[in-house]
Image 1 (cartoon, rainbow, N blue to C red):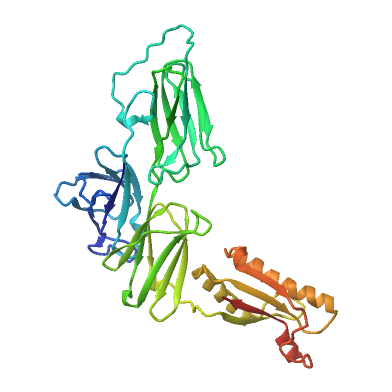
Image 2: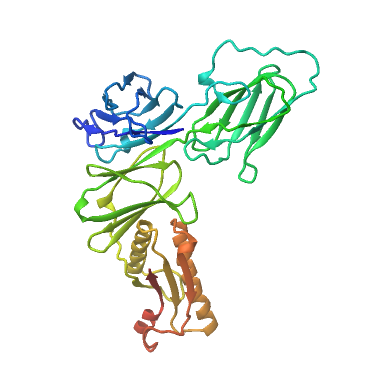
Length: 422
């Protein structure tokens, strides 16, 4: 069973301590089962990273709501509900760009202690002991191990560390996409401590009681909880926005659209920490704006009004070079930097770069120089974070002059690169 707890963490500014920070942070929340939409009884623990103090709040009202006020310094949220894996989230109020934060927190049901099946150490019941016979066993048991995402159930790359209680032996394994699981044959009864680590997931600490040597294979799938990452899109001009679409560009080649919810002037959703996202905003006037971001653990807030509007129609620009060089003239260099910023804002924009020269010198050398200028700018774009699949280049040499090559002024107009944004 999978349960999601949604916490509407409304973070409000009581007074400004200074221009950079808050005097206090107010958090309001609601906890409920995502499948049935019924409230859940849970507990919210607040712990400050500097260790100065802590605050524990138990949600008790009939609607599953809670409310508390904390100091504006780094803290961790510990979310727990009976029968579910505890979720820990790090929050830094310095990441807030507006005094309002909304979080969506998934909780996964625990794997409780049972014989011959991996379970969380936190659910261990004291008193179980393993009695070794001291005699060779003719029987054995095989256990297969595979780490899975606690929400999606998909296999993930993980490192396993197994510590055997009887012998203190340590075994280490790593699962991979081409080999998502591994097997171990056990010939003796034992209690094994299992630690599972995966990038961007909380550490899993489990136990496995090998009690039955039944010559059978048992499957163990520890559920790992991803470090949570929250998206808050602040709508300063909500009336001008027609649609917002957020795409996870890491999950699949085509990308997957994440679910967004509304709360006052905020669009919010749950992200995967360290994944790359494309945020598309479509306006009522026919323009659109885009931004790209890598999700970090905790809060990710963006102000929509801060995006630059990008015309949907193709854009054409011309950049000019000094003679026989790849150095852009000052005005063209500034224009190129503006193009780069536009491409950073709009991940859907592609660029076509075509190099041209005047007719001075050898024809083949002019062709080479035209191509080199285009490739030089393409490499500059790549170093600024623009992916190569968005860039195309070609060189036309001196074959397509913009004007006649009869004066130095005219020749300077032909030493150019033509840009098409589309």
